[in-house]
Structures are given as C-alpha cells and as structure tokens.
Image (cartoon, rainbow, N blue to C red; front, side, top):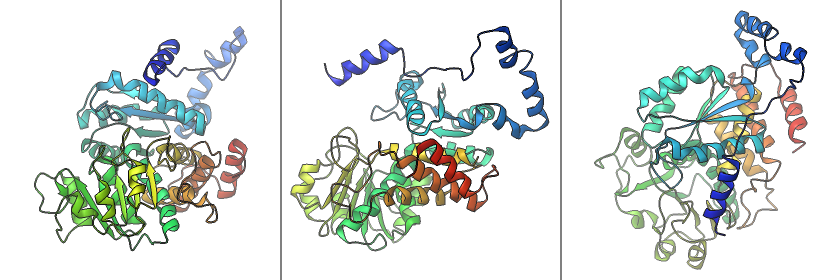
Length: 408
C-alpha cells in the first residue's frame, strides 16, 4: 500500500487526528458541581476581578491557535480552508507530542487581510499564542504585522520564522564543517516568498553580509519591476547596488545555496561554478532544487534538504514546538528577532564540534533535548528583554522545563 492510500486509511479510520479530553473526572453530582455549575462561577468571578488569573484557572496558558486561510498549503497551493484542515490537525498533534502544548486548528473562510486580522483578534482571549500557517505571501506579512501590533500575545508565522530559525542553525554548523565564516560567505537564496524573505532577514541579523535573493526573474534588485513592497525592501537590504542576473549568474562564486522554491532548478554545472566546498540546502518539497546525489557529485561539501530520507533534514519541527514552549512558559507578550537568533543558536549548539560531520549538522527532530533547549533559549531571552508577563526567574524556568522534559 502506498503512502497516499495509507494516509487516507488512517485519516478516515480515525476521522481526523485530534480530540478533546477532560483533565477532571465527572462521575457524580459533586464532580459536576465543581467542574460546572455552581462551582464554576467562582473562577469566573475571580477572573473578572483580575484578568491575569485566566492563566491560573483555565487552559489558556497552554493553548495555541493554529490559523490558516488555506492559500499556501504545503506544495499544494491554494486549496481552501476545508482541504487545509488535515495539515492544521497535523500541526496540532506535533505541538502536543513534542512540547506538551494544546493547539486548536482554525481554518478561516476568508482570504482578506482585514477580515483575518479582525477574526483572530476576536478569538485571541482563548489563546496564549498564535501560530499562523500556510498563508500566501505577501498577505502573510501584512497579517502578521497587524496582529503583532494589536495583540499582547506572541504571533508567529511558522512558514517564515520557523524555517528561518532552523535554516540558520543548520548553516552555522555547515559552515563550521567547511571552515568558513557567516560574515564572509556569499549566500544565494532562491525563492522570494515567505520563507525566503524570512531566511534572508534572519541571516542578515545574524551577521551575513553577502546575501542575494532570487525569484523567477533573477536576482532581486531595487529597480526590478513587479516587486511587492516587502520584496522591494529586501532588495534594498541585500542588493542596494543593483546587481542583476539569473540564478546561474548569482551562483557563480557562491559559498552557499539555500532553495525554498521548486524542483530541479539547480544543475550540476551551477554547483561546479560555486566557490570551493559549497553548502547546498535544497529545501523544496517533495522534490529538491537538486538531488543530494547530483549536488555531491559536482562538489558540494554539505547538503541539506527538507526530506526525512536524506541526512540533514532542515525541518521546522526542530523550531516551533520549543519556541512556543518557551514563549508560553514565561507568558511572553511578543516574539522578537533576538528570540529567533537564540533559538537557532540553541539548536546548533546541541551538536558538539567534535560530533559535526558533513552528514550531521542538525539534530534529529526526535532528539529529546531539542524542545527544552530551544524553550530555555527563547524563555530566557524574553525574560532578559522584559517581555515576559510571568513572574519567574531563569533558574525556575530551567527547573520547570527539566521537570517536563528531563535534563538536556
């Protein structure tokens, strides 16, 4: 039986992948009176007097909304809210399995920026964090910006920032393997959508100085026609001097290729034109921009993909569970770039320098150390920055994470 048939059987047999379970038993009138009427009135009154107590008396503090409009789902594109639900349910079970967080999938029947923003703002009292998912660019940028401005809980678009965090972690270690410095290498990113723009901006903040971003027209530059405002801003940031050319031209002399685009766009000849010992992250799914075998045959020293059947899977699962665990553990009011940089460093640091090889630059998503290490990095940065609403010290945070996940 093929994977598609098996997946259909599983989803039909279970009728989806999530359910709601009670934390308390209701087996008697006494149980009912405590969990519901009349006892439930007591926490209601307490929360009315002090809204912060909602974190003590409800599950809000452990709950994330996974929100989509179904316009950019995996490699399937604009398939609508109903067809997006299996992916949103899948994201919810990953939150639970890896970080112990409860997540609610919400697929919205609108693609209008303001309608999505207003809907999420009205839903926000139920959640401690918002995970935006599979929303097409450039609307995803505007939605995230507007929600961050209006909400006092963290808003995180995983297709952008989760990808960027894990990519930066992998690149830090890949460059250690080949003996190069982030501030010195020439990096070419192919794909100027949500992931490509976020990767470029995070790498820039991490110290990358020679960044080129390409789309179908070639290297982004300030005079390129048809750029949306976000791409124009990125072109100014990365290529203000206006260098032009196609992907092949961009790759000549490049040390790093990062692909978040489409299959089979990079040839062996392009790899051979790069600098010695290049790093290739061909992350298009399910088929990468170049196969790992072809990349290595033509001189690539380190190769990563988005697939689980090759070494060095650059997988968002290494990022978002720990990021949200850290955010919610300290009741962070926002997500910052510094938190993302800290998360990337925490992932990279899980592999000791003497363990690093060309085929081992990034931990496995099932490595139990990943979530607490990332949560610790994110939570302590939130505390340092003064954007944590919970009265907790770094030592108390570490103890709390160790109680849930064990030492790391």
